[in-house]
Structures are given as C-alpha cells and as structure tokens.
Image (tube, protein in one colour):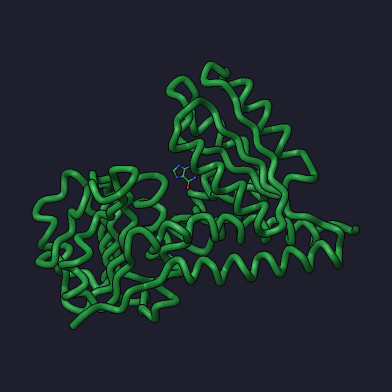
Length: 296
Ligand code: GUN
C-alpha cells in the first residue's frame, strides 16, 4: 500500500484564498484592513527569512503589516515598551514576536505583554495555559500546531479516540500540538530525548507527529501500517544536484514510510506552508472580532 500524500501546499492555498476574499469583504463593508505587527530582534538569518515570508503573505492577501526590526543589543525593557505600544495600537490586530529572542531577553516577559486578543501566534503564557485546561478557550492556538490539526482534519483522520504519538516537546510545536490533540480527545503520548525504546511507542501510533529536528529519524519499521504521519521537521541536507548545494528533508524517511503509512505529509509542501496560512487566518479573525466588538 502506498500512502495518501497530504498536499499541504494546496490546503494552505485554499485557506489563503479564503482569507484574501474575507479580508476584501471586511475592507469593503467596514473599512477595516487586518494588520499584523512583526517584532524581530537581532540578526538571525532564519528569523529574518521567516518574517519576510510572513510580511509577503500579508501583502499578497491584502493585510497590512508593520515591521519592527530591532538591533540585537536592544534591552528587554525596550522590546516590552514596543509590544505595549502595539497592544494599544488600533491599526494592529495581531502581534507576532519572532522567536528565538536574544539570550538576554526573557521570552516569557515579552510574550506576556502581547494583548491576549492580538496574540495571533498563541504564545502568550496565558493562552498556552488555557490551551492545556479543560473548558478554557485560548484566544488563539499556535500556528504550526493548528496547521497540523487542520491537515489531519482535511485528510479525514479520526482524532477522537486515536492514539496520537508526538515526537518532541518544544514550546513552539511539540507541547502545543500535544495539547490540541488532547483537546480533540486523542490519547496522547509525548516522546522526547529521554524516552526509552521510542520505536516501540511510535509503532502504537494511529497518528504520528514528528517534531524533533532530526533528519529522517522516523523509519518504516517505526510506523504502524495505515497510520497518519505528519512531518514537522525542516532539516537541510547537502545535495550536489541543487544550485544552492542543499535541500530540505523532514524528520521522517518519506520514501520508506510512505509504503507503510495510510497518509503522510511531504517536506517541503506539507506542514511548512500551513504555518503562515494559519497566521493569516488568525490575523483576519482578530480583525473581525474587533469589528464585532466596536461600534464603527
Ligand atoms: N520561530 C520558529 N517558529 C516560530 C513561530 O511559529 N512563531 C514565532 N513567533 N517564532 C517562531
């Protein structure tokens, strides 16, 4: 059996098209242009590339973006002052603080200052706390984990009652995706660097989410036949056939695992495009809730 390939690029494009249309309607009907403020501290090249992509998506979908690039020496107090300003700015509906922040700045202190209703990245500790609690709703859930759930829903996976195994417990992906799966009534096991006999655990998974940042870690022998496998990994490997001399591969050995799994996401073109699509959707939602709450 060869797995269904889950086309994240196509699903992300569908979401983006809907956001574009709804943003145009919101502007025509209410004169409101959804606005995303991005805060980037330091000169991490990957972070700069991510923020560029997020702002480019805003431009393509008719959303406003307000970029704030701060030198790596910026103090924590200065970053907090900016986030407070943005939290009170009526043109800004969503705030994204690109992570990681430089080591001298506390992520928790900064993320706590993002207004809850503008926390389109879902990283304010209050929103993360609500995500993990029964009968509490965060304003927003983090984008990559939400993208994983969207892919599962769209490929027809049954989450409720399934055994979902998550590889990795990072604040950005592993932990929040585990909480989202739990909230959807999956039985969730989280594996990490100290887990013994990971393969024995992954072989029990109906849904396997790999987010550990290890090239082709998940091999065919670790996957239960028919399982749905979601690969969040983005790892660079050398490739002499490419002009750049490298290419991206996931945490899953795609060629081997696709022969065993029921459905699988490729890298690139799986989870990757979903992160920005969910961010755009969250920013639109934030603008719409403001429109409902205001008397304009
Ligand atoms: N760094 C890596 N991924 C993310 C993300 O989804 N959001 C933010 N803010 N920073 C990141």
